[in-house]
Amino acid sequence: MFISFVPAAISFVSVTVLCPILILFLKKLRLTQPIRKELPDDHQLKKGTPLMTGSIFLIGVGIALIYKQNPIMMFLAITFILFSFVGFLDDFWKASRQDPGGVSGKTKLIFQFLFTGTLIYILVKQMGMNTEINISNNLTIEFPTMIYFTVITLFIVGSANAINFTDGMDGLLGIVSIPTYFFFFLISEHHEVQVFSLIMIACILGFLIYNIYPAKAFMGDTGSLAIGGSLSFLAVMEKVEILIPLLFFVYFAEQLSVILQVTSYKLTRRRIFRMTPIHFHFGLKYGWSENVIVIVFGLVSWICTFICLLYWKFVLYP
Image (cartoon, rainbow, N blue to C red):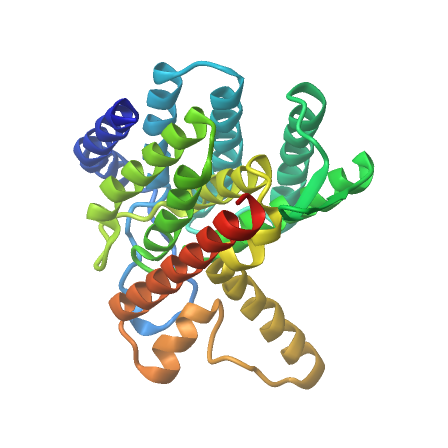
């Protein structure tokens, strides 16, 4: 087990050392974050912060592949890279044109559905993953391949975007995603998943040195969509789909707040929250600082992870 921490340690040191160089490079190219006008005043001050620094996580992916080259690790690496590519397209558009809107949502979804469908096909047809969803140790629901394929594709694309919504404050997604990766490190019987999860935690910790408030760099969709895609696929690979609503509670709360806000405004011209995603609401309504919001959301993520561990241990796979 100890040797699994070696690539993680190398990843942490590499990200910590190389991130300042990447930040300077992005500043020189003027690839910085444009800020939406409707965001609070304190966020307007963040204009000019280097964007797409989440590309630094690809160092960890490279280290993972050097450490172990087999189908599972290759699959995890390719998943991360493909979702990172979609995020990069959006970030580059935003930064190079200083357009907060970025690439159209339709374009991003086309890429995500294309990549997700292909990857699920590989999982089921090439890597032999079953199409069951485990409810408990004694209850399993078998789905026809096409139904499972459709449902899981929608789930992964939706989850990846929910996780992407969470990247809206300094250090927020990093702090919230660490316990989720840690969950997969603890439960997986695949050494590759354990190593990959540890490496991602190490990369995020190294990046957080520059991303906690006040952030010197933003991961952008290059990092957040990659984290979203990899976590969503890990849930499917580890057959813990039943735990997703709780394990991804913070991410889904962020996404649901946006859906409710838009729906309410279209139907009644009234807003439920002061601003969405919901992390902005706590700042505007209750005066919470960014650090307080990040800490609270992180604690909620750890609590949800702990409950999921109990369910996994005593109900799902006792």
